[in-house]
View 1 (cartoon, helix red, strand yellow):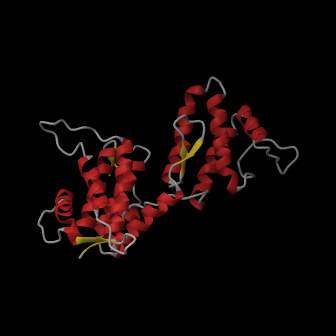
View 2 (cartoon, helix red, strand yellow; view 1 turned 90 degrees about the vertical axis):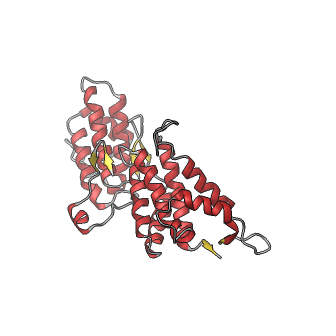
View 3 (tube, helix red, strand yellow; view 1 turned 45 degrees about the vertical axis):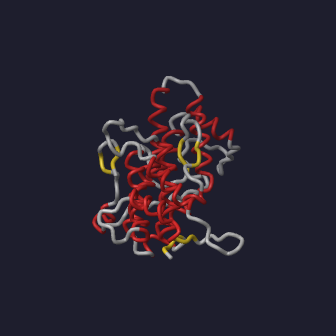
Amino acid sequence: MTVHGAQAWQSFNDRNAGRSADPAWYEGVPEWLEYPLREWLSSRLVVNNGWRQQVMARLRYIPRVRYWYGFNAQGVPTHSLLEWVDATLHVMTHRSSYRDRLIPRYVGEVDAVLRDGRSVWKVGASGDALERRHDSTVTAAARDTTESAVRAGRDAGATHLRAAWDAAYRFHPDPSTAYREAILAVEAAAIPVVVPNQADATLGHVLGQLNQQGHLYQMAINDRSGVSLPITVVVQLIRLLWDGHTDRHEGVTRAVPITREAAQMATHAAVTLVQWFTSGAIRRL
């Protein structure tokens, strides 16, 4: 995993233990984010009376001490920290002053804290509000799929899926890496089911086998008569992923860069396919 040529950060202990990066994103304000968010709020609001007064007025904040001066964010309840960050972002970016040139740096600081703390919240593109990074249902599905891959003995699939998710949704996304890792995740999950004895098999081989001999495979979903439905949808989803890998080779047809949206779509498609192939939802008859 790379970010502008530098390796994505992972803790010393995790690197030495060979553990993969944590793919989870967390709701609310987890304990490890509380202090950094309080510190950021204090740094922004203690030095600017106008910002502080406007945020306090908007949030109807009543200090515990009647005659109250200064600000250190200690009186802000933990569950309200994100609301305070959101209000401060809006006030900062919409209030003109000679310090406007510093605002992008302040916005970037809190966005980096939220990213590194694996918060489901991030600063939106406008810089004046928080927005959800991931839907909680989606993140749970991705986490369950990686666990399913590990239980099925497809550790490589779990590792590649985590790498794809991280590259697709990190602060500085790497769409090409995300798409490539998504394909590798599906290969690790599908090859043992579809072409287990083929040397150097790829997702293209999986696609060819399913396309030509799909009748040899069964899906968990049945039709109304209790017969397994054709695996057409599986073939279509794999083909979508395979054909959409437009930066795989450079040649007569020029490579087309993978967009962030395409990488995210491919990653979600990989989550579905890895779950299907590692859970037994698709199996050979």
